[in-house]
Image (cartoon, rainbow, N blue to C red):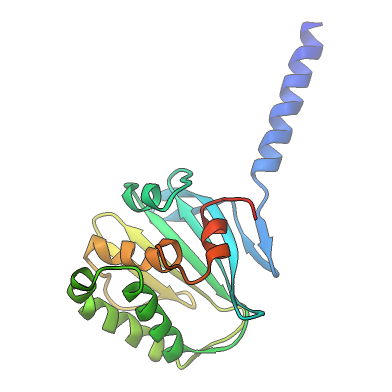
Length: 194
């Protein structure tokens, strides 16, 4: 009887581990259940699609040190964080940079936004320099404690990190703020069922 119980327990644990370790696949984009950001192991909090009208624009995944169900928890959480975005359609990069700026501005008070204007302009320039983003191309935005916000486009780090901690949170508010880019995507990143 004890051997059967141990076997059942081992089987249940193996099934739980196998189920937990499954990546999320959205429109052909795979989000692993965990990611490493400069030595910090992060877990996928949630992933979803950004729509513009009826068109899929990109797939995004949010990685955190531990699960969080609210924007406040995500923003207050210490440690490394990552937002990973894979394009699903071609988009003009300068337009994408403007959407980032607008998304930040729409989710902050004016005085907080004005303090971040140099970083916002630099972020817009990063995307303008790439001319366009094509389907399948990936960029990540990482918060690395002690380093800052690191932007990587197509596998290449883009200049020096943004040092201000509030800059990363301002970027996250594009998706998690009171006026998110896409409400369904906000829910998906927070791990809420559709």
